[in-house]
Length: 166
Image 1 (cartoon, rainbow, N blue to C red):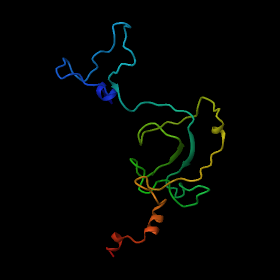
Image 2 (cartoon, rainbow, N blue to C red):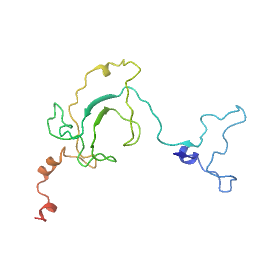
Image 3 (cartoon, helix red, strand yellow):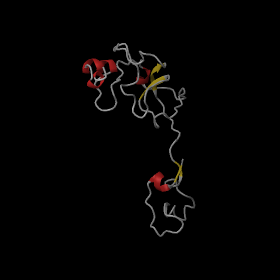
Image 4 (cartoon, one colour):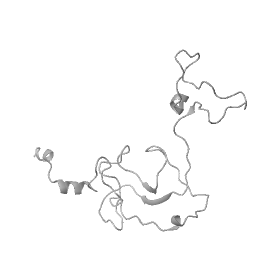
């Protein structure tokens, strides 16, 4: 949304007795040049900005409900793509998904637009075939030791909280 200069740029507030507001920039520039410089902090849009990145590689396309979406040719463990306990600030993956190499700008659950690049690819590393050997599905909370819940239950044995009810 729309934000002022104090929250948007971290500008220091003016003194308490300032006329016509104190969450402002005191001076937005000199008389000449007779325009406001682009480096002066101004109020405006904060968040939900449009970003463009190039040279992203799609590692995998996945369908929802596929029980083998986390398996590869080198790792034949039957597991889904969702880590144990879900992704932090996201949860379970319930829809079709993409695995992209590298980071993606924006917050979680932010819509992302993908398109074919206008600029031709010249890097040799971009031309090489992709072979993903392992997808880590251990817990992203704490120290993840187990790739699946079944593996965790098998290692820990019957839990005390589960046996009291019987």
